[in-house]
Amino acid sequence: MVFIPCIVNAIFAKIAIFTSDARQPKQDAKPPKKDGGPHQSYYALMSFSYVGAMLSSNHALQFVSYPTQVLGKSIKPIPVMFLGVILARKRYSLQKYLFVLMIVLGVALFMYKPRNDTKALDADHIFGWGEILLLVSLGLDGVTGGIQDRIRAKYVVPQTYQMMLWMNIWSIGYLLIGLLVTGEGLEFIHFAFRFPSVLGQLVAFSVCSAIGQNFIFMTITNFGPLPCSIMTTTRKFFTILGSVIIFRHSMSWLQWFGTILVFAGLSLDSVYKH
Image (cartoon, rainbow, N blue to C red; front, top):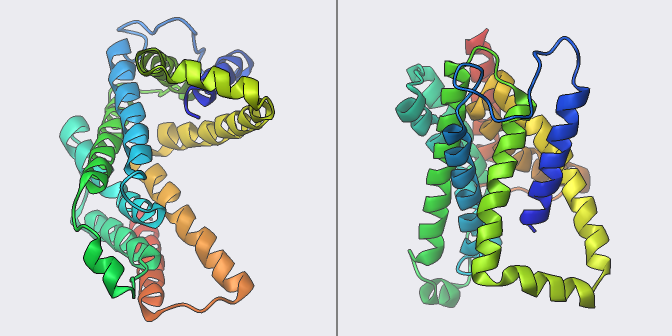
């Protein structure tokens, strides 16, 4: 589910480099030189943290529910902001910290669903491997964002498809090693022979992933990883809010309060920037 999309993403980026607008700086498909672009060590570390964050988040589902995972990942902008400060020496105003906190807290409150089953609550653990994996995933998300911020700060013209290409190439390498070591690669081949229809679905999923990742990297290179993380976090909020409005579902007072916080944070951030 991760290896094949990374291959398709890399092919998409490679094609985009050759068909990019002539007004864009030429993006060589060869590894960038020290004086011509980010060193490969940036991409190697960024890909490692990217793959690690994704695998940690997915494996957390073995221990926690999907709503818990979504709730945990909703605070992603916070580690992205703080690791950007540490790794890329970014500077944010106090107002920026406040507005991001309002957005994150609003999304978390909107997503939170209190459990009424007392027995289930008593039997459930408070903090375990699932929560640890989510924290690891969030920390690695912050590392990925910090490196991307460092690249944007160090190089005048960030190259969207070069970053997308090399991050996916390094990710393919890491994932290939993992597939060989764990034996999951052979398991997938046997599974595909038994259910060949899954290949068409996987290709369709990968193409959609490549198109979506294209816009993500455009956002990162033009605006930065923090705005991108805020967009990807609030899109879940707006999707659910749209469903609530269209299908006329009821909302708790906690969700209304979260909605107000999100819109207030986004509005104040926009007004303050301008």
